[in-house]
Image 1 (cartoon, one colour):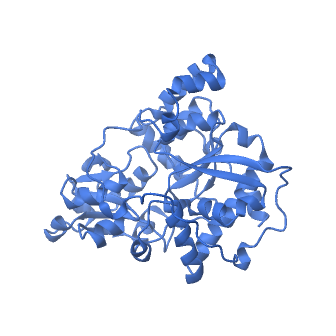
Image 2 (spheres, helix red, strand yellow):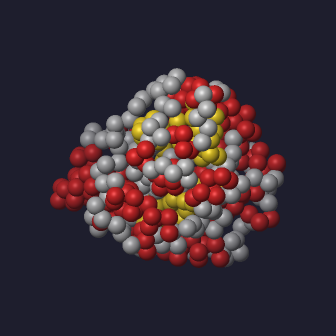
Image 3 (cartoon, helix red, strand yellow):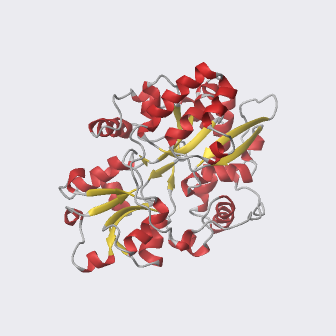
Length: 396
């Protein structure tokens, strides 16, 4: 298992958990780590990262705040927090997490009595879940993974409380592309992918269901392609040097590969993907553990701040002035520093009310079980609880 930044600050994970919760509980966490991480991280192909998306050194200055639009005004009624509460949230530094970044920098969390620290880590959900389970982290944000189901089957109450990034009509930030060389040779449709090597960031996430549906649109199955697991930042270079023949690309890497490097050509992109997989297809979510679930006022206060941030982001898709401010926030909070990329890329869709089509989780679980990523399925109402975000939305 790879070490996260949080792990590196300690001598060993064993010492950390023993000091935090005792040796007997550590035995449980150890088994949970094994269960959550099971089948999550097969061997990946590593290629040089694309230079066009290299994190800048040093700390970027915080953008200058401007007055919030009317729709993002301070809620008239918010959950009561008797004192300022500090929360730690793991984020993956993806653009679809913009609601959290905006809520921190615009003061939306402070408005509801929260001091939210956004913790960056390269850890997988399987590595982060145990930290949320014991309260070392309060929340985490990231892609929907089979690790959530594995944790639930181990009796750990990690729960999805809100949706973040989603494939929404007009804002589809995924694309399926082939190398420019293959495209020039006539590989221009999904059905032409039979026998080809296709790069994916994970074979245990909900985007595997997305790929399955895309392949079925060309009368193919997952077994008709050769899946190669590659980190998202490495995909443009992998396409450029021929390490893979096709890829599921996520922005901004889709733009880097197809426009900046001219290394690939999309064969399915934009709303054509929504036509295949359905609108509001969930990609990333906010997850909490038992400590947050047992404090509804605290959780709802967080979600009020988050939703205000998410809606401010959605305004940026229409209002150039707000867009400029959100770009400044994203440049400050994520590795994406290139203004030209923000102009060229498709900005991710985000749910305005924090909900999504939960039926997709049923389908994803069946697929994960079929492919050995989980041993058993879990009822969706045990994985997802929208009560808190629904209550939060009413208070904005």
